[in-house]
Amino acid sequence: MSQVHKENLTTVENSLPNRADHNIEIFGIHGIPEDVAAQHKARVTQQFYEAEAARRANSGNPPPGGNAGAGGPKKPKIESISEMKARLAEHKARKAAQEADAAAGNSTPTSSGPGMASPGPLQSPAHYVSCDKRP
Image 1: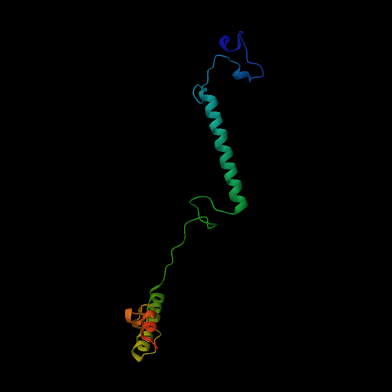
Image 2: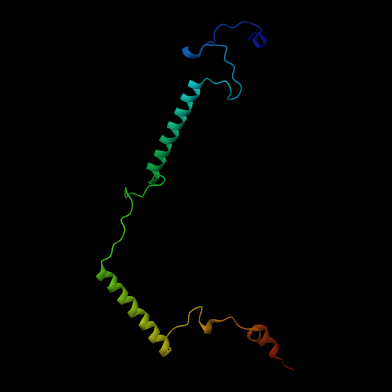
């Protein structure tokens, strides 16, 4: 220490009792005693998780990977055979009604129907303008 301060230091003033040694050389993060680094890392990690828990409590968001209040995995939906047959019968009746309407011509066109195709080059607005020539 005499190179920098031009005097011999024997103690470090205002230091903690376990950190009074002046022979420790720290450059950046190199040279930090292992116990001090472990304490710092534990303190920072604890503060992070406490702050994260406080943010979740304030916002009402669930923890990562958790369900939003259920507390456990979702219960699978189990149908009985009679419920499945009833649902199948409803589906078949709906499909039959749609086919009957389509056969009778009562169906409304959808975007994929034949009446909804894009106009061809002869049906474009430019065609109508060019055909209307007045002398």
